[in-house]
Length: 532
Image 1 (spheres, rainbow, N blue to C red):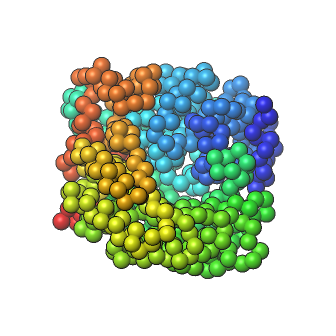
Image 2: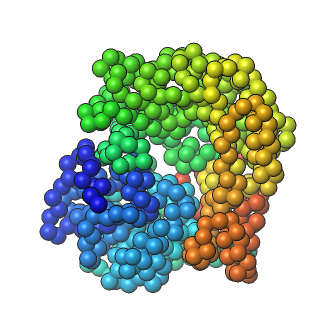
Image 3: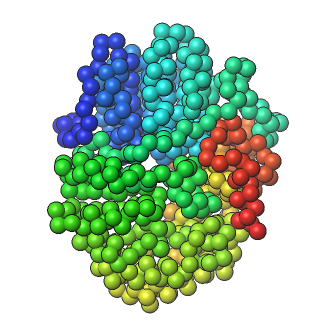
């Protein structure tokens, strides 16, 4: 089999490492085609590979570059919670103990970063020596510089030196105490006075955002060149991790965005514009006008989800001319009342107008993101979603309409982090499936059971780590988790306490010592406003 690395076109200059360079393995706990499609993974790998003081090899579950025999750092980009099983398998294949406490001076430091670990690293804390919280751009340089300075020191000294770098979290230097093994957290404190009591997520404030550093036909999106048009989202929907965790909202100017796009289009004709709310870039109409020029006629453009009230006929027209069949918009619910609760600033008229513009612009389909089980939701709110689709059918009869629907999952650092998963959500998914089928709407529900597992991990604390390690030998079904909870009864709270319980606002949260986005007090105020 030919190596997939041979098919890559690099958009940066790989450096020739010096003989004394830091020996690093940088992994992604999934296959090559999934990992290389992650813009975050590409960004960090290019930063490592373009430095002469670092010798880096890549590692995926199905392929690897030649690896150093004695690496000093082994890192992972962690984008999906349930990839943790693959991560542990990769550590075992490298001969590294999976538990941080079992590693000695002869072992490399295991580090991780990415959205899962920045949101709530605690369920995985005992697997990592070091966790990088926040954006890679401001974190990597001080991390590598400090590591180079202490590389010959004892393991404990290396960890303590790294713990003083802003944004670097060393879980073993913090002690978590509980009222009793199955009770709530009492305190989270550093084990010595010299260790900072809180770790603050680091934010990239430069004028450029990320763009692909490699293009390959073997990526999950073949030959795509990705450009980040915005980072974070100004809307602050109250359930949304992508909004709250990545604050503040940042946009590069067109002076940097257009050259970045043209750099990629020199090697491929597939362009992906990324961001939580890309049409809210202040110069987005000018960007669309630029891409509408005849020299880009051969380019296929795809967009991440766009804000509903920014869908215009000219945007739809450009996308249909540039190979896109459909557009994706997040509406969450058909209920005006519930949209106010979650801070989704969106009127029903705007949703209908978006469908009308999409049809007039020549698109064939419109995909919607929805959600059930949102805080304060009633059966009437779910019925309102069915009513909305009745209206959409009348407004844009030629469009193929699809609703992708998930169950609300509480996420750390958002106003709804205290609110549990509502079991009635499962029944509401079934109701939507039945009613939308009558209208000929394609309904794509996310698995309710998978949402429960996601909620467990997103609200979990360190007591989950032994359970997670156990579950990977049983399989990934909800039944596997329930079995492990049964077997570990008396050693941690029960499943429902993590997943379904509404937590009092005075609860000591597992991530209390990690400062990200907005202060807890502000999040409490946002929650009060929502419920009011």
